[in-house]
Length: 170
Image (tube, rainbow, N blue to C red; front, side):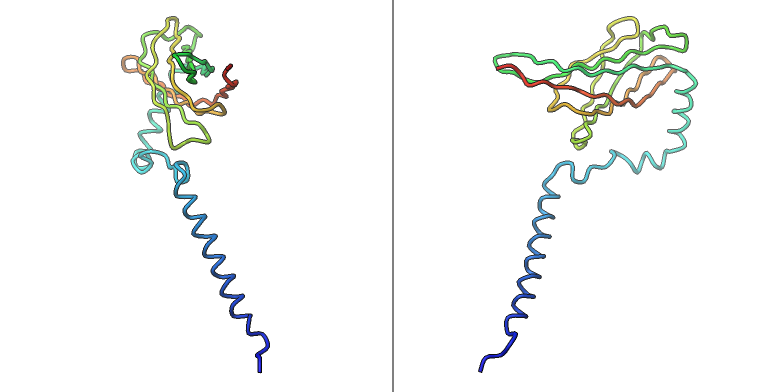
């Protein structure tokens, strides 16, 4: 005598095991991605110091400086082709004159690779122009956080720029 519906418990168990297997796979994939859990560095300290951050931002705004940020791709050949980019920052004061003599640093964050920000010190190229060469893995949209210090003056700006990378010639 065979029981009708004997397979239902097995179907339910198989379905539940399938769901568990899919969830374990998704957990593994999410945890193996460097950008899977990217958070702002020192976000707790920044949150605690929010008022001083706003004070610095207001002082930066009072300077009425402006920054023009550009990122352009360059391919260099040293036996092998490596991808690089040139970061250019032009600082101007409220009258439009170049801001010379500043110590300029930048942090570059790619939107799709936020787990690996690039930090760079820029060299002064004269007349308020600053630049640096840096290695890049890919093109696309970049967030550029620029900080410039000149004596007691502190300027900070966040800019977004698109880096167009063409395939290297072979």
